[in-house]
Image 1: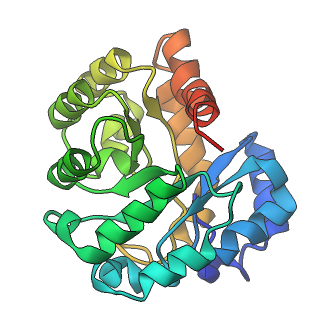
Image 2: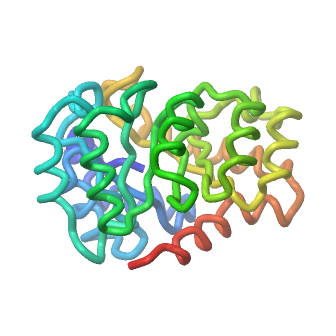
Length: 251
C-alpha cells in the first residue's frame, strides 16, 4: 500500500481508517512518496501500518531514482530506526543493479537489516537476487508485473528466501475465475505468496486516486479468488504468510 502526497487531501488518514475498517483490513506494508505520508497514516492507524522505507520523494523519482545521486542522502535521512521494516517498493529495470545509486541504497538497507521489496520483471529480479545473494530476504512486488507462472516458479525454486506479492495481477483470476496455472503455483508455494492492493497514485496508468477509489472492489476481487483455494492455502496467502514474514524480520 502507498499513501503518497496526491492522496492526502482526497483521502485523509481518518478516511483511510474508515475504509480499512469497513473491509476488515487489519494491516499493510506502507511506503509513500514522500516518506512522511507513511507516518501520517501511522499516526491514525498505529501498528496496522508497517512502515517501508522508499526511495521516492515524488512521483517523478520512480523513473529517475536509479541514476539520481540525491536519492542516497534522502533515503539515509528518511530512515527511522526501529520503525522501517523493509526497503521498497523500488522499481528496478534490467541492468540497473550495476548502477552506483542502486548499489548504495541496497547497501544502506542491508546495513539496517531491511528486507527488499522490488518492483522488477523476471530478468531484473534475477539480477537483484544474484547480486544480494541467497541470504537476503526479498519480497517481489506484483509477482513481477508481467512474469509468467513458469518464470515465477523457476525463481522461487532457486531462491528460498524470495516471497511474492500479488497486487495488480488480475491475470491470477480473469473474470473472477482462478487460472489453473496460477492455482497450481499458489498451492505449490502456498507458504510464500501474499496479497496486496497497491494504492499508487502517480506513474504507470494512474495519475490520481483511482486505486483508492476502487479499493473496496480490489479487496473483494482478491477475496473472491482466494475463496477458490483450499482452506489452509487461502488462510496462508490471505494473512498468515504476511504475519510469519514480519515475525521473522530483525528489529
